[in-house]
Image (cartoon, rainbow, N blue to C red; front, side, top):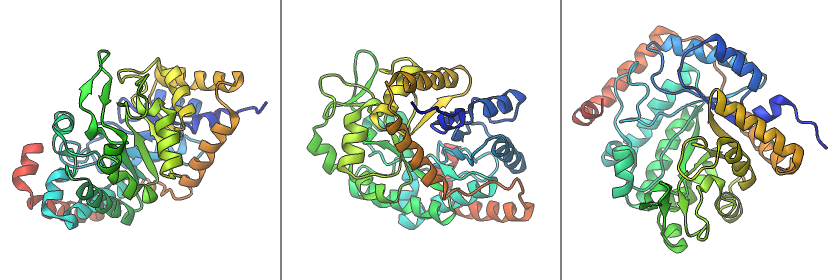
Amino acid sequence: MKAWQEDQIGQLFFLRLGESRWTESLGRALRHSAPGGVLLSEPLPRSPQSICELLVRIFHHLPHPPFLAVRQEGGANDLLSGILPPLPSPSAAAAKGLSAVTRLGELSGEALRLLGFNTNFAPRLDLSTSFAEKSWGAQTFASDPNRAAECGRAFVRGLERRHILACGKHFPGWGSVSALLRDGLATSAKPMADLWREDLVPFRELLPRLPMALISSAAYKAYDFDHPRPASLSTAVVTGLLRQKLGYHGLALAYELESAAGMPDVGQAAVQSLNAGCDLLVVDEGEPLEIARQEVKAALVTGKLSAERIEQSLERIRAAKRRLALPSGKLAPSTWKQLEERTGEFSREFLPEVSRDA
């Protein structure tokens, strides 16, 4: 039986910080768990240099180069608005045209790269529907599948120009979700053929150039009719649809393992999502991460998780990390000032909208 090293197990986890600031306990947690990635949460530190210093400290406390991520979309999810002029929402940029969407991705990517990030949990490829708008408002690009695909491609192009890894979400599309089951599990009852020609269009178009795909925490009856479960726990969705039918070779990410309706406890959810075909598990720091790590280790010993399944994920993670930009910890004030000016010029094109979102 293969003896798994702690840092190998850690590579399967994306640590989500409760506070985006350095503490000694964070340093100990990083050394102990050796996560493959770290996701910063809002609010970010209030100065660009403080963010740079935080990211480089995280980097130096890990044995392998980490994915350093944030969720930066613009609009209501503009985590950089405390240090840059506010950026428009995806829907507002889409209404202005594809060049504006590319510019949104490029400015976001440039800021992230200067700060030391290398990964963005965006774009949102879900179609705009009345149910989705209740959750996300203007954070989707469009209701038309082809338009959403065009805009998603434009946003990714902007991130790519700044060497930021994109993560398309929420596969296979939250826009088809229309109801909550009795236990609160968000559910799509849309037939498979309708999902294919509608919600899946942006993913089908973009998956070949997406290094990461964030799997939905909603259930899809077209794939799990008898026992609806979150898509990230569904072998039919992750392995059957994403891997086999769509031929995706990038990283599949599971999230909300400790909080979404329909999830078992975080340890079981971690094992089930890996068995379903996910590669990286986004888990909160502290007890949730430790429970998930120990459950995965135990499952490898008992055979509930196979070594072959985990080696597949580790190889995909290693392949993605060959493209990583790494933080320097240094930021020239003049460079940031120039970015502020260019971001401000772009933002002024959307003044009523960005003022409302700010």
